[in-house]
Length: 205
Image (cartoon, rainbow, N blue to C red; front, side, top):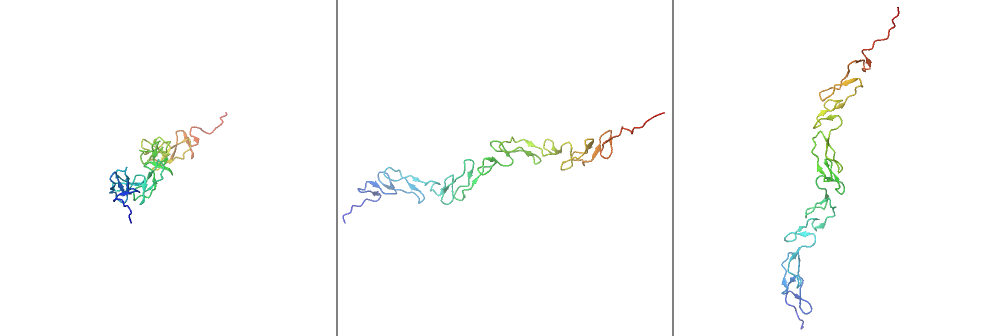
């Protein structure tokens, strides 16, 4: 029919362009995998490029920040880590020590602007949160360097609060039983009678 056909790899009205999938001044065939895009055309160098979101030698993996079988872009905030890769579900996870909907708060047991881990003993309470300084504090009733002793006025293995009156002394400490003992000079059930006072008596000739 007299039609003019282009040689393999060439295209255009006068066969002066490269066919799709061919590159360079000689319109050489690209050798990219199905997942790759060839940098074709006369100006191309035949490099095999991954589509957005894909990575790896043959573009069969998700680029960092993309997830799932179609390598969809994650939508996490800057403070969050995306559960990416082909096997990922795109969930936005907080780095260790961070918490909250957008990972802008410290997890319990972490403190300061960088949410560092507290180093308190099991008996201590950490001054945590973003505003905290990580100081290890004793719960009410406890004392000592590692909060393993009872504070004065507290007794027993749970350091319960003594209930003695002002004139009484509590049998406190871990070994104490909380018994209220009258202080010197006081007597009576509630230690509210001064033992040195005798009833008034009149002496007349």
